[in-house]
Amino acid sequence: MVIAGRPVAVRLRARVPALTTRVVARLLSDLPVYAELPHEEIAGDIADIVQHNLRLFADVLEHRRAATDGELAQQRDSAAQRAEEGVPLDAILTAYQVGVAMCWEETAQDAGPGDLPAVLEIMDRVLVLQQQLTSAVSGAYLEARQILDSQEHGGRHALMAALLTGEDLDGFTRRTGLRPAARYLAMTLALAPHPDEAGAGPAQGAASGSGAGAGVAARRKIRRIRTALDRFAGTPALTALDASGGTVLLPVSEPPPWDGPGGLRDLIAEATRAAGVPVTAAAETASPDGVPAAVARNAEIVDLVARTGRAPGLYRLSDVLLEYQLSRPSEALRGLAGLLSPLDAKPELLHTLETYLGHGLDRRAAAAALHVHPNTVDYRIRRIDRLTGLSPARPADLQHLSAALVARRSV
Figure 1 (cartoon, helix red, strand yellow):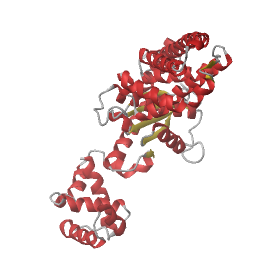
Figure 2 (cartoon, helix red, strand yellow; figure 1 turned 45 degrees about the horizontal axis):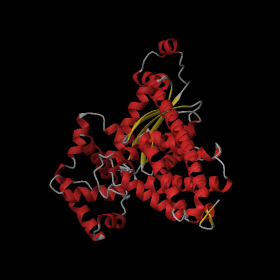
Figure 3 (tube, helix red, strand yellow; figure 1 turned 180 degrees about the vertical axis):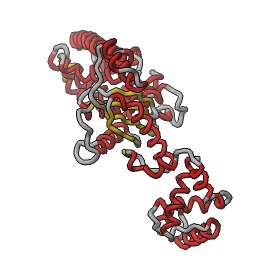
């Protein structure tokens, strides 16, 4: 098929990169939903699918045929992902229409009177491809939404609710026919916000995080977390997640290893990479009857990790035994916290103490973190000793100082 003496498919393929940029720019300018999407999504998935469609159109024209089912697989996958992220179907179909229209304009712009037969054939191919795209995208989108809705309101949701509330599971099984696994890996996740959740999409700048783009970014993050969890378990996980985190129950035959290949640390590392945000997690394997208590402990552990300023990652009770015990209400807790009350009016001393202990009593590392000279750290530690009677240099005092810092965060 030739227009103006040049094969249309060859010309179109040569212009794919530039045309992709123009199509994406048009989507951002004409469709508010796309203007609010995360930059990561626009520069990645959206640009990729636009480029795929342009190359598909060139193949359709070159071989004078309709698109095959296999050639539409990427469009179906993309539609399913957009469904999971909550992008409206009408916006997706409009985007495809815009892309096809611009592709038609690109191929026909140099046509002369003698090219009328080729122009008419191209138009016919355009209409067929548009129909195929609409059918494939709509079908995949609606199927994905149906699956999501059934998961949210179906048996898995009911099973997770029964496990978390401590419902009589024998009665639950008789009533629903659903049988819990022999044991579950109970996890509590805390997810940091993704930069795109601030709503700063490519056409927004530093816009408010209340727009549709922020919601899409949050759902995208959750979807990627769920994918990593499902892959690890080999079966769909039971999850109750929002943008800040939540609870996960993974059916397991045996307690999974904590470290090593395929262990839980690898799972959290993979979830962190997939979501693009720091992930803090606490995990414990429990029988179905023990799930509520395990989830409650995990939530406390994640909260303690956050309050004590520890790095994101995977934790268990043994990692925070001191903090956990000292967080139990008691008169001793208030007494420990009171050991540092002389520093209440000296926040720079309290901050220095926390930093010094946090860096393993390394004065140079603490000084670097505080942006002061090491001698300043030494001076402040001496002042702490004079005010409290406690010095990190004395082993017995060091234990009291560490416990007092934990206690202050717990009262």
